[in-house]
Length: 144
Image 1 (tube, rainbow, N blue to C red):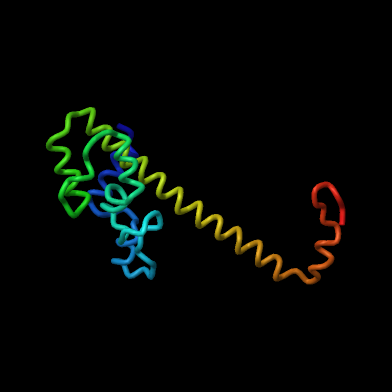
Image 2: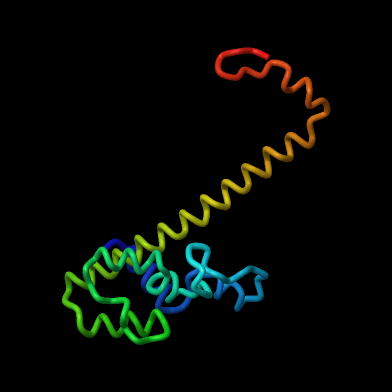
């Protein structure tokens, strides 16, 4: 198993991943709702197991791992590690990593697009002479 996957599982079990609920516990002013589904707070357990996105991922593994009756990621992981074989444990680990990686990419992509849009708006507002900026606009091969 790759070290980055082991590290993710360790940080998730130790409640150290940067889910918004952990950031709020450090007094960071941030909305702690899941950005991918309207179900509730973005806890580590929610991110990796209970989010509708995570549930769809787990469904693809054909393993019944979502219906474990626990409240924390550590409890969920501990429960599964006691009953699964080695290959199933690898699937659990890699799926957790893939879910987390995808969530972080989705969040950073949204943040990046927001930054780009702010940059564009700022440049338009700062333009001294907007009409001169658009004097040579080409639409569908035609100059205007």
